[in-house]
Length: 185
Picture: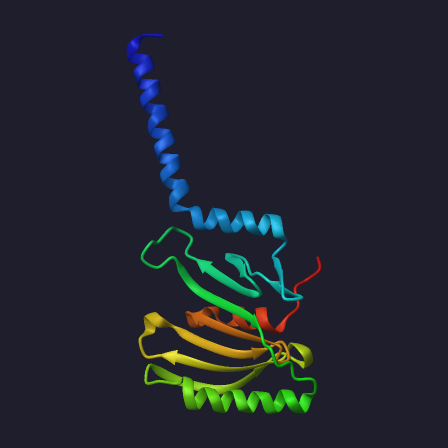
């Protein structure tokens, strides 16, 4: 092999390695999320509960708080996630249906009195799920469309708090996470 041929092979190899590195970095969010899902069967355990982790969402646990983040498929340093769900155990577990109903009304009243602002329109209480997986939520659609929508809930029969921040098209995923048990398949 001549010097010219070796030089060309070396140049091709270097370009291939650089291109692979650039693509690996650019698609890192997709690769990391896919790897997590392949090894964890789309669910996470925290605070005595098992939660569904939807496709393209990546979970983390800090003490007993679960955070699910939906990363953009390609790295975007200015805004790495398109939506976030946060779940935390609630200290005062309502034991009866009447106490859950009262808790929902109190939560809605408190939210309307203290948590709303002129940033957008708030609606609720919104009920989702049934029995022990029931959620009582308040939603705020922000005036600035780039901020999307926010939902705050007493979830899982009032035993957890749940928060969603993201685009409206991801809100159904949030409600699925807080009102359905993961499949055992």
